[in-house]
Amino acid sequence: QVQLVESGGGLVKPGGSLRLSCAASGFTFSDYYMSWIRQAPGKGLEWVSYISGSGTTIYYADSVKGRFTISRDNAKNSLYLQMNSLRAEDTAVYYCARVTSVSHDYWGQGTLVTVSS
Amino acid sequence: DIQMTQSPSSLSASVGDRVTITCRASQSITTYLNWYQQQPGKAPKLLIYAASSLQSGVTSRFSGSGSGTDFTLTISSLQPEDFATYYCQQSYSTPYTFGQGTKLEIK
Image (cartoon, rainbow over all chains, first blue to last red; front, top):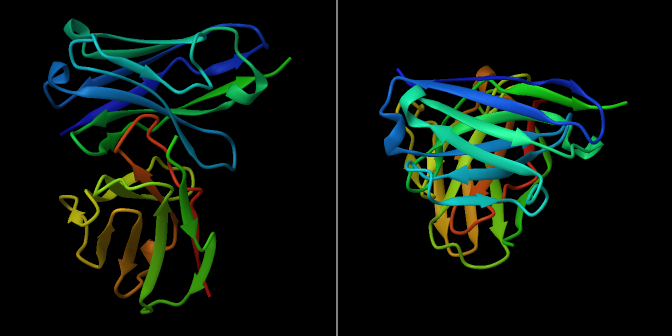
């Protein structure tokens, strides 16, 4: 069965960096685009970024462009999100999700990132 | 960016009720519209994709319709496990924007 497990969240000071990971299993990882989607406490969902199966196509939301970098290692079935220059407004639960041609069909359980001094 | 607007933002209903949630896009997204259910403290779960296709394993109590800019999610007969927050999302173009959510509560 498809499983996505995020890790790497935690407390970081404003201006700091954090790297999130998402371990995938139960499907051919390299065949799928993958996304990061976040949810601030008590708020709605915000799509952050996606990456193609080969890693050659990448898009970012304007809110994170230039600060966040998405990447993947297909040999390790893993997705990453390098987050730099973190701000208080980046505080959220970060989910990784599998992308189909039209939707996000499987989601991980999420990892909480808190940006605070 | 395409703006997605859901209505209502919250809704009180009883077990057995038929409920409809609407989602409007700021421009045509053809049928690139998905619906997700989120229980408190849990990850979102895909219910409906491509406006009207039921995700595998999802109960047929849920149905979706619409195209262009106007879409609906209908729950035919509410069950206790259906009380949750529902989000629409467009996958027509990046950024893949979500509606603000509809919180469905027990009356």
